[in-house]
Picture 1 (cartoon, protein in one colour):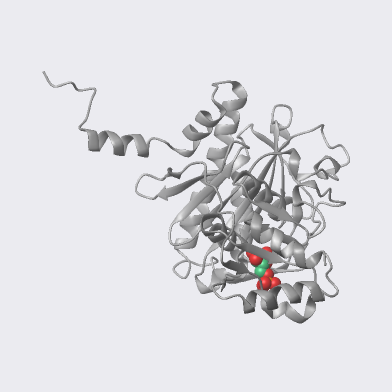
Picture 2: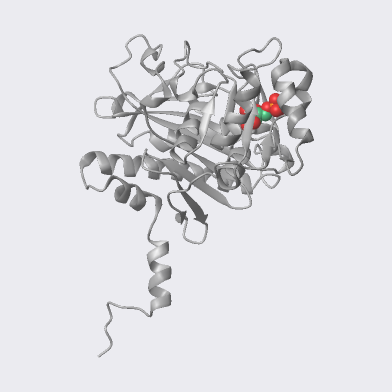
Length: 342
Ligand code: P6P
């Protein structure tokens, strides 16, 4: 009699892989089936849903209206808002309305946090996110990403100033990014290693790609916008001149932080966005760009610093605070510091 509870080994392997979905993996990470575990599993699943929705919209760029191009607005950062920025921001909000999971969302695209009052009595989390990182790449069909950071909801923020969010990145309980590239990938950590998933559009699930990713201790890639060379201070210029002289180094810079970090996570190296003349804090925002990526890269065995302080130790003075960022393989970051500390 055929045992109908078993398949042949090859099919069993495929089923096992396809059924290790994002939500299932979060539960396996936490290792319990507590209410908190299910909340975090559901929360990660909602972020995944937002990512799938954004990926679908991007795949229609050029085919339907209002995917490419600008809205004509300027955001709190003073940057032109792309149609995709506004769409992706709204997707994250919709993913958490009626979810009961998240009380408050803070985004690069919103001056103030967005509250979901009906969630607040029970919603234990705040989500900080950059809905579309690398907007300049959208209209030329190059890789972009979304970045997210999960924090515990503390108090009820009566002032609406989100002062409780002005804490170090070590208060994050999870972080990650979604990369909209040749395939759509979801990378996350809940503080127990870094794990990568690839979207299988045929079943609409993020399927486990690799667990416990470790960044190489040193790599040959350095990623920086050399168009800003004369805006940097001399030690940073000296470091880049040194990299020019070292045989075997490779400059890679995509214009999307998530894509550059993804390359460095898997191949090693260092990404730099230093302070510049007139912009000593650089360009990248701490709470929803540098801090979540620093959380992830530290979990993978790498480092992230402002040049003076570990990114995860920086306490911002405002929601949209910026910091210089030097992030990647520990040896590469140390090499940059050796120039900055001369
Ligand atoms: P620049 C995109 O606007 C972004 O925030 C990051 O994704 C990217 O690394 C950086 O800015 C690019 O900035 O000044 O080099 O064009």
